[in-house]
Length: 80
View 1 (cartoon, rainbow, N blue to C red):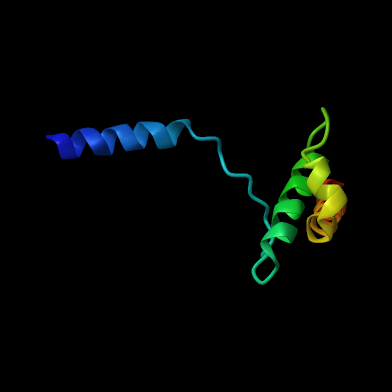
View 2: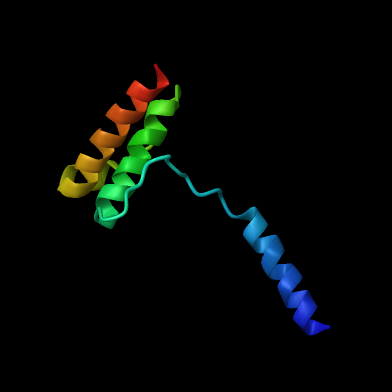
């Protein structure tokens, strides 16, 4: 019985977790910082109410910044 209670509790906790942002691009082989930037940049291009960006990381992490710019530019072009 405890086994099922733990399983149900885990399912409920996972259901409350925020949805993972996804992009429709294969980013395999890119560094994690670039991928994170790409996803944030792409999300920013979809929002009318501001950017999704870690400003401190954007200033200090060139891979994140490069990914953010690429994600923003590519996803903006796809919307048109």
